[in-house]
Structures are given as structure tokens and as C-alpha cells.
Amino acid sequence: MISLVAILCVTGVNPVPGGVIHSGADIVSCDLMISSLQNVDVVFVGEKHDDSFAHDWELFLWQSLASDERALALEMFETDVQSLLDSYLAGEISREEFLADSRPWSNYDTDYSPMVEYARDGGFAVIAANVPRTYAAMVARNGFASVLSEPGFEDLSIDSSSTLYREMFLATMEAMGDQMHGMPLDPENMYRAQLLKDAVMARSIEGRSVVFICGSFHSDFHSGIPDQLSSDSFLTVSILGEGEEYSPDLADFVIIREN
Image 1: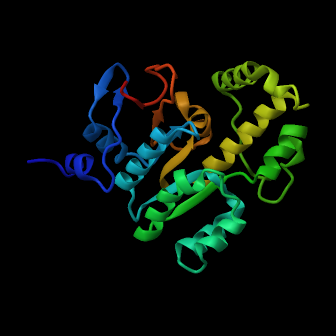
Image 2: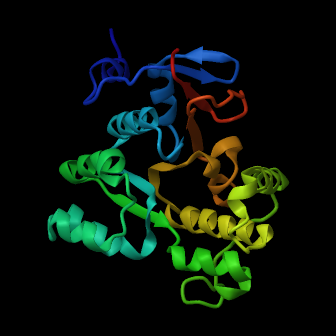
Image 3: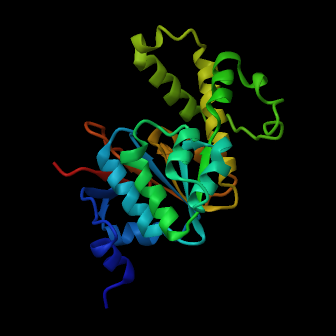
């Protein structure tokens, strides 16, 4: 008998986007990946924000895993627009009203809207997960002390113990080189702003079952948002962009384009 998951991977709402799925040293089936992801509370899907291949997989994974118990969580919306997002999902405001005040990313229409519309049509929840950018900018300029007395941040727990994550972040900043010269910011404070984002995104899904769409840096190597979670019931998916190098430790499942 063909499993329901196998049928889904062949005939889902959208077709399987293609590519090769790696798990450690093995190449695995879509069936195996989906069945594994169904068994955890949090599924992180890490993307490069301008990668259409990643966006195709994100929609497929969300369609495959969505349920009344599992929400969609998005880095691309900030926590202070949650009520606006809820109103749109409930049909209380128009799409135009929603987009006018929710600060959507420039690629929202092509890359993230299909997932939100799938949630709206199916009656599924969507979580606006990210910290409002004003607060991240405050930390990038002046460190944690600038926000931790603000309402909603007094009791925020931020785990800064991961040396791997810190080293990867600072190495990325250094590699950006000339792009950073116009930004008179301390790299350590920029790292603190990154930790703030991760901590707020982790708090936004506390106790929830979700598919979390985020930049891959926020979940690769089980670092970033996973560092801030109180639960270990999660798996990670990373979708490699053009020219990125595969590492078996990158994520629980790594999807690579076929040449």
C-alpha cells in the first residue's frame, strides 16, 4: 500500500520542487523527510532570501505539514504586526489594508504571499515572529542595555553561550569587508542584535507547533534560533543557494539543486 506521505510527495498541492535531499551522509526520499518532520514540534526551513528554488520548497513543505495544530512562523513579519496579520487571516481587512501597514519585504508578493494565502484559505495560523527592527537597530548601536528595560523585553532570556554561532557571525561580518565600511557599528553589538532577533523569534513560537521560515543563518548548524529554544523537539531543513557548499552538519535535511 502506498503511504499517504508518499502520495503527498507525488501529488501534493504543488509538485515536489526537485533537487536532491541529503541527511548526513545519505541521500533520502521526500517521503522519509516529510514523515520525520511530522514527528517534531518545530520545523526550521532555512533559506537564502532571494532564492526561488528555496521558496518553492518552502511552499511545498508548508502545504505538506500545515494543520490546525501547526502554524506557519515567518521571520519576514515583526511581532508588532501580529494583530494586523490575524485580522487579515480572519477576513476582517483587505489584502491592501494588510500590506499597507505590515511592512512586508520587497519580495513578499512572489515569495511569501503564497504561504500566507494557503494559511488563510485553510484557516491555519501564521506567526509574525521577528523583533521590530527599531529594537534590533537600537541594540546594534548601543548594545542590550538599550532595550532590555523596554516593555516586553524585561524578562527576555538570551542565550549567548554558542561560540560557534558568534564566530560564524563575526567571520561573515569580516568577509563582507567593504560593505561594512559605511556602517559605524561595533561588530559585537551587531552580533547582540542578531541574538536579540533569535531570542524574540524563539519566544514567539514557545509552546507552539510550527513550520518556521527563516534565513538559513538563523538555523544552520542547529544554531541561532535553536540556541534560544527551551525544547529540543525540532528538526532543521536548509536549502542551499547557488554555489553554496554542502556540509553534512549543516542541517538535519539539506536540499540541493540538481545540475
